[in-house]
Every structure is written in structure tokens, then in C-alpha cells.
Length: 379
Image (spheres, one colour):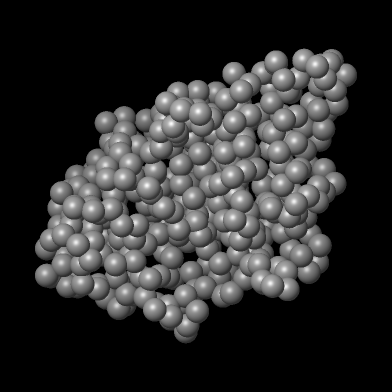
């Protein structure tokens, strides 16, 4: 089974929340309670999703923003909890959250863009692009294997003491970190097994910088965020003032506490992006067309390799008895100190679920599943 490293209601003040309130009010007037379960109208779906979200927010299982869409239309979007607990500043729909490993989908698309430009070969060796990388490993590992987590390169966060020691609080250059923490002996013969590795995607970021002569951050902006209109997304530098950025919180025996510091030079192309639910809706829409990537290459993002992992996306087929049984669910989660995220795309119905949370609640995948069940039953 594929395993991921995923790591209260407030006053409605913005336009989208006001619209939701109007929709819910109208639904209450025109839809008899006995008919709610039989109808799949947008208003009814919004009511049912709102029930799911408010229940989890009240149980302190969720603090963040949620967006659900179908066929290019937003069915539900709302924010819960606080962006800053100390000042009691509420989350809203423009609050920016670190998305952790969801970053990998952007890195994978950038790599395929350079494949399209004939500057990267999927079956090229890592040493072809990173001359400073150790030759005995770099000559055996391909770009394709890095994208699919089948390279055998150890995951740097598995280094004993890494996450809670000084290494995670140190600023590194890309080359220094690659050599120190992404160059361990291979755990298995490349291409023979799946093992989730942040190191692999860090190295893909290094390759992108090497072949382009630009920073990974600039590539994100120039090739994805600006063309798509994702104006509230970017690279989450710790020291930079980022308007509307949420604070992250971790759970302890004494309740929530401020998240541990993690230098953002470390997650890099494996997990350093921040975004909003609205921007990720635009991202989802862009993935249905050719403006970022031609169809033949875009399909590789979602083509399952070992353990049903594509390139930056997991490809799931729910079993009978589960919501969306037999359909394809494209998803990825993310977790970084104080933040969790999940995106789920159901291309057959053109449905989208995005959850961005500024706590480390363990319930985010469960919440996404409940929303999927609502969508499935409302068809």
C-alpha cells in the first residue's frame, strides 16, 4: 500500500462566504428537508459539505481553507479557524498556507516542460545534468526514476536526528545540501522498487536550475504561477514578509503550539511552495488544457508507475464499497512543520477537492474522503 509523508466556525466576512450564506439560505427555503438526500443540486451539495466541515472544525480536526469544485464551477469554499492564534486573526479564502509535498506536482510539470524543450531527457542520467553529484550514483539514476520515486536515493528526512536537530534549521545552498544529504548510498537498484524520497525531488530542482540558469523559484513564477494567474502562490522563504501568510501550529500534550522552525532552503523543490485554495483551483483548471504542457507529456503526470505513483501525483482506484469505486482519483498530500494539505482530482467527473490546514491534525485525508462521498452520492 502506498504511504504518504503528509506530513469553530468564524464570522463570514468575504464575498465568497457571503455568497455561500445566501445559497444556504435559499436552499433552506426551497428544498424540503425530506428531499435533501435525493437531490444533487449545487445548493444541496454545498449544504452537505458544510455539515462535514463544520463538524470537523467543531471537533478541532480542521483549521484552514477548503474548496470543492465540479466541472469548472466552485460548489463550496470556506475558511475555518485562525491564521494566527495569538492575535485571533481568522483564516479566510486568501490565507496562504505552506503546502509541503504538494510542491512535487509543480516540480514534475517543470521537468516535463524542459523535456518538451529538449533540454532534459527522461531517461538521461542524473550525472548528465549535475556534474558535481557523485558519479557512481548519478550514472545509475535517471530523471524518470527520480520523478517516480524509484531511484533508490535515501530520503534525507530519514537521516537520524535530522528533523529535530540543527541540520533542519541551517540554510544551505542547493549544491551543498545535495552533496551532504541527497548523496547517500542507494537503498536498492534503481527502477526496481518504490520508495518515497524528498531527496529525489530536491535533486530534480537542482537539475532544473542547472539546465535553465534560473532559480527554481523564478521558474515556478515564470512558467506556472504567472501564466495561470496564481498570484497568491510562491516560494515560502522563512525570512520574507508574505502578506496573509498563516502561522503553523503543532499538537502537543498541552494543546497547540507554534510550529518548529524549518529552514525553507531544505524542502526546496520537494516541499517549499505556499498557495491558496483559489490558486489551486486555477491550477486544476490549467491541467485540463495544453497551455502549460502538451497532452502527450501532461498524461505522464498521471500515468501510474510502481505503487501507482505517477510523476508528482498518486493515481488511486478506490475499491468496491468506497466512494468513487472504479474511478481514477489523482491526489497528493503534504505535511511540513505546522501545515498539512491535500488535493484530490477526479477527472472523469471533473471534480476537485482542496484542503489546506495550518495544524497537524491527522484527519485531513478522512475529511477529503467524506467530501468525496458527498460528491459521489449527489450525482
